[in-house]
Amino acid sequence: MTSRGPLTAYLLSSTPNALKRATNHPFLASAGRGTLPKAQLSQWLSQDRLYAQSYIRFIGLLLSKIRLPTQNPTTPTPHTQSPEQNAITVLIDALVNIRTELSFFEKTANDYSLDLTAISAEEGGCTLTSCGQGSDITISAGISSTGSGSCPGLTGGNDEGPQKNGNPGACVPSTKSVAPGHGLCQSQGECQMPGGEVCAPGPQFNESGRGAEPGVGADVGGKVGERCGTLFFCANRTTRAYIDMFMSAGSSGVSVLEGLAVLWATEVCYLRAWRFAAGCMREDGEKDYKKDADGGALRERFIQNWASVEFEEFVDRIGDVVDEMAGQIKGAEELEITRGRCLEWWRQIVWLEENFWPTVAE
Image (cartoon, rainbow, N blue to C red; front, side, top):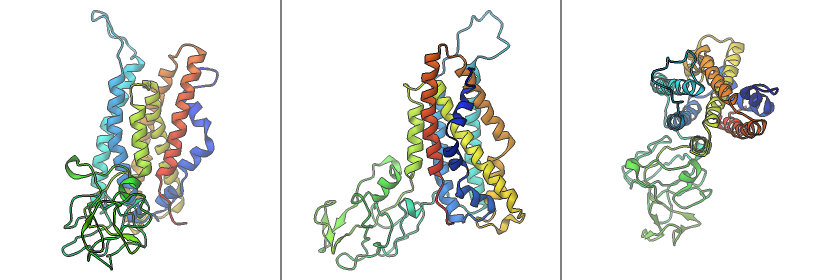
């Protein structure tokens, strides 16, 4: 392409330390050794599934921007496809792959009893112990109760539990909540209410048990009481940032080449990450994966799928299209501008990849 080499090679060599942190994370080492607890795998997998769902829309945005070169219908079809045609082919394959991947998620989760809507306590999940008569409370998604459908906004912590003075059965949100009624929503992104409703703060109560507007007269003994509602699973901070990045990279002001570079960057980081986990798996030497902390889901199913030769070939095909389209750029100045833009996308993705992996116990 140039004396500096292909665009993909340039990006891979630009941030070696950050790339290593993103793809050699302790979470991946624990996954490869079979020591990752089932609950933590469920929490990560539930976010990865949201990422995969947003990937579909991103691919659609890229496809909508590609313009095939016009050809005279009477001329023979060229023996070699144009870069645009190659891009369409790889993007359609990406859609087919992600549809298969989502089905794979659901089947494997069912086979190993994994929760695809699990909420991490670090990201805003809460354990409610008393919410009045008839309540049905869990720590996972879809927390249900006999209350309204509004998001309670509880963020977890030591300040939860029934309100001792005032309204019996009312839940007390953590003092770490940044906004009454919306601690969970703000920590995890947008709240997924049924039927597309907009999440609104639930009713709060004063000592007399009368309703109070959020933030007005709701202070009870230094804490804010709030009626139990329904807690819905949604994207955490990093997943939300990833989804926003996809939408930005697919917007009209971003070139097709940049969007394809983003697609390749996410996939090559994912491949390298799970290849690292596969290496840890080989070093461990254990063959009875049913003894693993997750029951064997990672080492029997997930790792071999995400570290496969087939996935590597797909990632290489995306990279080939990126380099081919970059090779069409005329002029040194325009080329440097494009490389600079792609480098910014690359740095953002590497940072997101590192932060997408949950913290694990040493």
